[in-house]
Image (cartoon, rainbow, N blue to C red; front, side, top):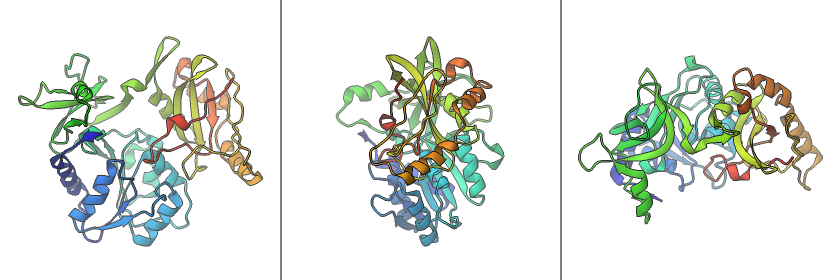
Length: 381
């Protein structure tokens, strides 16, 4: 647990009100479980500013059809999505599109260019915000207002929020020039006191800040980023999300980004998995427009396999004819493994092309709406 301060939370709420300008007619949807720090601003921001608070029925926060209907019924103007849940929301069909939305806020995962483009096309009168921040720094520390002219480009995470400093440093804590990838450090008003009852871990991650006043600290995020020439931050990935396979250092996010640009591919997750005693790249894919809820499909799945890996189908005794048909339609949206490989090889070296492609009806999510990596099925040779 990260022990944040009231001052840090208030700083974050005041900043958000400055950019969203909520007032009495606004309605904020509270759908995030209170174990996730996003719930803090969902609860308190509308109450600070006279707006309405609409609370999702317990257990329905991962039901995109219900959320669509609730938005239409209560005229919600502001809500938050983890990007993977936003993709499911866009896929869901609940009749008439919600037209009351003024702000869609995303955080918790990297927002892909394809999800950004789909959102901006579907909700042209709605502002889409891409926020970034770890739990150790009072919810969010940077923000970016997505632009329609960026199309399918991966959006940056923007600039620091009020009273916050961001540093991109090398291994010796020296600032890196524009365009160079380094580790992202956070300082300023939003910083947590540390980890509750974990003094050793606190001293390891919250270190002295050489750029601030005496006694100031900064938090080592473990995230990789770089400054763009326009002064905005570009998120690259986790330092521990880089993997080494056959001697090559690989950034999984780069492969996910390339896959998400392919026609017919919706949600994507690329993982390095131990298969038959060997570490291999495995891509988990959902056909665009096929999934609407979270969880690993319990229906028959027809995974796509590459020429270097034969994968069995994942099945359940409870599968029905109708569910199998639904999954078949889902799988048919995704190109064949040979087409996926050929497309990826146009922009990626061979060693970055996954050995296996597994098609799922939907990606599994945790209770907080983030990708549940541990629930992804392991392919077999």
